[in-house]
Length: 89
Image (cartoon, rainbow, N blue to C red):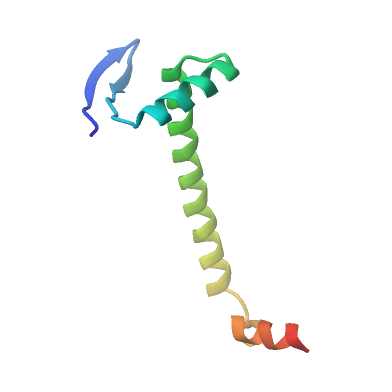
């Protein structure tokens, strides 16, 4: 369950989240945070931000691939079946 609570800190809107996790996840977070010299909160914030950045990059990569495919020469396109047949030869 996530319970948002909004507040402002030097003109930056922040949101506090409460997340229920299994005890072993909490232990793993504490261990990892300690190894990195971070608080659990800071580690979780970094993990969330990185995950969101990765999702955005994945979407951009997919859009680039769709664009390249749409603008490629159809006679040069090969299906997975074509590639498998060529690999077996």
